[in-house]
Image 1 (cartoon, one colour):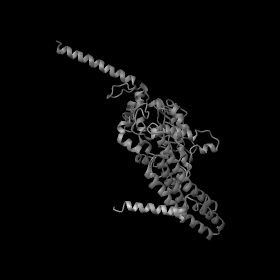
Image 2 (cartoon, one colour):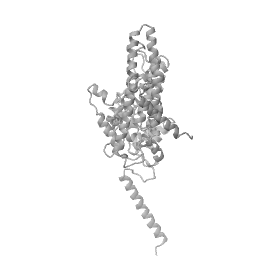
Image 3 (cartoon, helix red, strand yellow):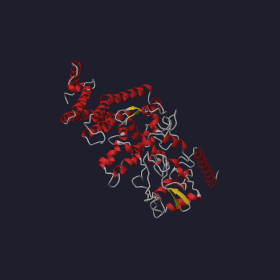
Image 4 (cartoon, one colour):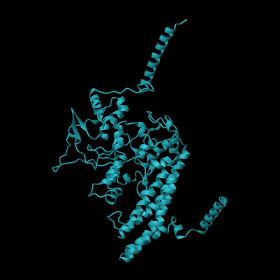
Length: 499
């Protein structure tokens, strides 16, 4: 009979081997720790000095604590690997025995993440800072704000936080970059801080990796969250986040988030998770047939931003620039769709999507844009000062707010944004504001000696309203169409007569 002491020894030995086995399995899987326990971090002697000192400073303890929870810490990527600068860097300063960069840029991240850096630099995200010359920025800097008082306050605290700024430095009268009493270079507060996706950094690189991978966790799980994209992609003019939440995709994500394995690596749709796609799934993350990409345009076939939508490669083709054809981009996106949906489902969806975009273009986008151009050419509105004429606001709402919402709603299966927040409001704006305002400008032009220009605008307006798209507005529906509408209305009233 085995003694109690012997049993204890056997149990202890078995427990030891079980723990050893778990450690080996964890190491093989790349976890390097027993599930349920905290992973060990790797800290070099030099980084240990940074961690020790900054752990005692109230403004840095959170950053250190976040870093300790990151994959960077587990893999031995510490403070100096990211923050070390060359002495010639404009934002560099001496910090004890090290030369440190104030701004960690995508170029700094490229020391380890070369592929991701190259993909991002060629992406549309990286070009987001170019909004600084757009109508949006005219609104922020001139109409909403004032460039001569408190700088460009609206653009600085609004636009640039998402789009990014061209980082500038505080300089003395001779143009030299100034430093504070601690020897740290002084950055122009109108241009930093921000983590704008298209920020122009001092080293020439574009963007901020922290726009999506918030420092100092740099968590892939967080970057895969729809909320991460929702920081910028929301609101009246680009409500992709709200549209996603309305869609079946968003509903499934919310209901099954715990099954999404957001921190898995790799994270392949159809293999590592099946519950729902996120923004990252469709635009960035891997499928069984294609790898992760940090070029968000590689799966987008339409551009839904401008007054008139066009295929995403159209501008490049016009200037003779080589780019990925829109057909290939659509093929890439459809590969994502095919992981959950049948071929017919996907193809029919794209037919519906294309039809909505083309309807918007042909019925409203193109005619409204042509009429605006004609108004300027006829000198019925000013051509060089945006937003000083009422109709410029009306037109802006039509394409920049309502038109975008409709097109984006169709692209992401958001029916309410396609209809009531989209095409309904486009039609309302066009028929009850845009067209009457054009008629008023025509009459005003005639009263002020601009009869020829007014007649040109009137001719174009008559052509637009006389088209098949707008004949209902002129009361020109055919008898057959009127009869069909009357029949449908009668059936509808009969169906709900008892309500």
